Length: 162
Image (cartoon, rainbow, N blue to C red):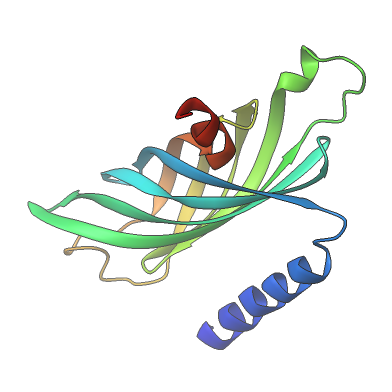
């Protein structure tokens, strides 16, 4: 399983480097809230790949931090999303995107769906399948999950701090 995951990530990185001439890449930081049988705060970074604004691809890594069974815990998370909106020549309707993606941690893997407003505010839900049966601090992480995330492009932050 680990070899397949490493091979998939390596192939994704190699394929994106060859597609750089066609796609624009933006760096983002994000912070949010994750509920997965336990409340977690999330902070991390993402790369946003876009050719046009009808389909946007995002890859990211973050840390989930929270208290499980009275002990503080930190869990790494890797995620990938596709944001889709095919409305053309209508700016107001192009402000929201349908979002589909997946996230994987050391404890669970979860497909997710949701919506994104301007690609900045995300609201998603999904179902987690446990990878490690012991869970985190003895608490198993499986079942329905909920994510609320705010994404901040570094270009926007740079312009605000000028």
